Image (cartoon, rainbow, N blue to C red; front, side):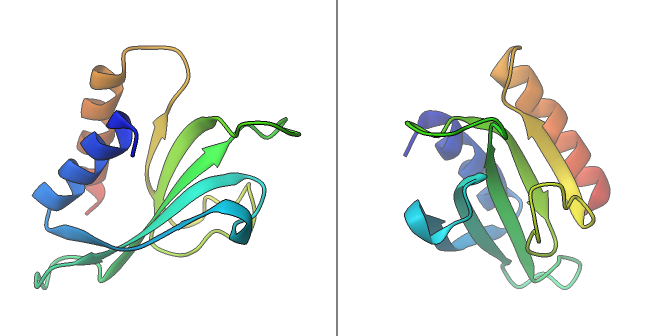
Length: 112
């Protein structure tokens, strides 16, 4: 697992969510590199289930899938433009990851 994913997972664990399912490979649509399904751990104020989608470049055609953004939602995404149940989003393009991650957690904590 790449370091940025480990850092993200630690943040979810700190917020009392556990990774219950990890999906990757050909079972996913072309626009998702990996998907996590998280469940809240015994907290009545938490949503029971979250979906963490590692979205790829929409121009991607072949080769290695590169994660452009990470989207956390309350429902599974129907297609690559379905942001209807978005909780938080992390842009993986230019910028300092640690700063972006801090902003991501602020957005996440304000919506949860």
